[in-house]
Image 1 (tube, rainbow over the protein chains, first blue to last red):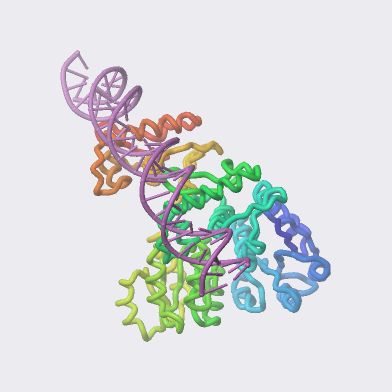
Image 2: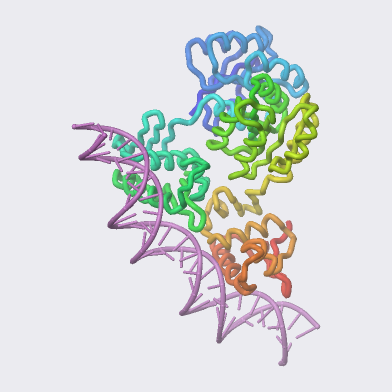
Length: 223
Length: 223
DNA sequence: AAAATATCTTGAATAAATTTTAAAATCATG
DNA sequence: CATGATTTTAAAATTTATTCAAGATATTTT
C-alpha cells in the first residue's frame, strides 16, 4: 500500500481521483488547495503526490518548488489537456511526470507505478506470511527464519517480485548468475530442490505458490 | 505504456529525451553511461532502448553487441548528425534504427513507434473471455486455469493471434515445431483433440471458435 | 596458510509428463 | 453410399523434471 497525497482546489476532483485509485495499491489523503496540502506534507510522510497545476491560492509549480526544498517524494502534476506545452517546460522545476485531465484510469495508475518504481527499488516482498527482505538477506515465515544460500535467495526473490511470470532456466541463469555465466540449466533444478525443501520445512505451502511450468520453467503464482 | 531505457553519458541528454518522451506512451529509465545501462538491463525488462554511440566507458556498438547476446529488445542508436555514415555500417551489428542529434521530437517518436511495431511480439490475446498469456504461460477462461502442454499452448496461441486464417497441418508443424521437424501431420490432430477437450471442459464454447476446415486444416474464427 | 565449512555444480538414476505413432471408428462430401 | 479425411483411442517412444550423491569451488574460521 502506498500513501498518496492529492492536492486540488476542487472537491469533485479529489473525490474522483480517490475513487479511481481505491481499487489499486494506493490510499489517498485529500487536500483541498495548496496550503492544506503543504500542511499535510509537514506532518506526514507520503509515497507520492498528485498535484493540480491550476489552483487559486498558489499555482502548482510554486507548491512543487516548496516541496522540493525538503523532500524527494515523487510528484505528478495534473493538468488539462490543453496546457500540455507549458508542462513540458515546467517539469524541469522538479516534478517527475504529469498527467492530463480527463484521466485514463490505466494510464494514471501506470504513471504512478512508474514514478514509484523510479524512486523506490523493491527490497521487500511478502506473500501470505512469507517475507523476503533483501536488506537483511532474510527469508522468514511467521517469524521463523529460513536459512537460504545466496543463489536460492536470489531465485526466490526474483520470482516473488514477479508473480505470475514464468522464467525459463536460461532466463534465471542470466538474471541470477549474470549473462556471462556458463552454468547449465540443470543446476537451477538443484537449487530449486534445496530451496523447496527448506521452505516446506517451516510449514509454508510452497507448492501452492512456487510451481514448475512443465517444458518451460518455474513461476511464483499470482494470487 | 512502453518502458524505455535511455543510455547516455550526459545527464543533460537523458533529461532532454525523458522530457520529450513523457507526453507520449513512453516511460523512461535513465542510465548514465554504458555500465549503468547494462546493470538495469539485467534487472528489468524494457520495451525499447535508446543508446548513445559516443560514450567514454564503452562505445555504443559494444553495448549493443552485449545486449544482443541475450535479448531481441529493439535498440535505436543515437548519434550526432555528422557521424551518420558510420552508423549505416554499424546497424548490421544488431541495432534496429538510428536517430541523429539534435532531435526532431516527432521523428524520434515515429521511429520508436516503428521499431516497436516491427519487433514487439504479441504476448496476450483475448477472445470472449478466453485469455492466452505467453508471459505467464497460461490459458484461462473466467479465472479458471486450463492446464495445457507446451505444444497445445503454442498451437492455440498461433491460431488465436491469427483469427480467420486457416493453417494446414504442415504449416502448423513448421511454425510450432520448427521447419526442420520430421513430425507428421496426424500428430497435430492428436494435440488438437486433447486441447479441444481441455478447453471445452471449462465451459468455453470451443466449437464456435476453433474449427476444422475440411481437407485443409484448422482455424480460429474471426468474430 | 591450512583446515573446516558451506555452497555450487554436475551427472546419473528415477519418476513424471508429454509427444508421437498407429489403427480403428467416425464423419463429411460429392 | 463410397471414399478419403478427421477423430478417437491407447500404448510406445521420447522428453523433461526431480532427486540424490559426490566432487569442485568458494568462503569462513582457526
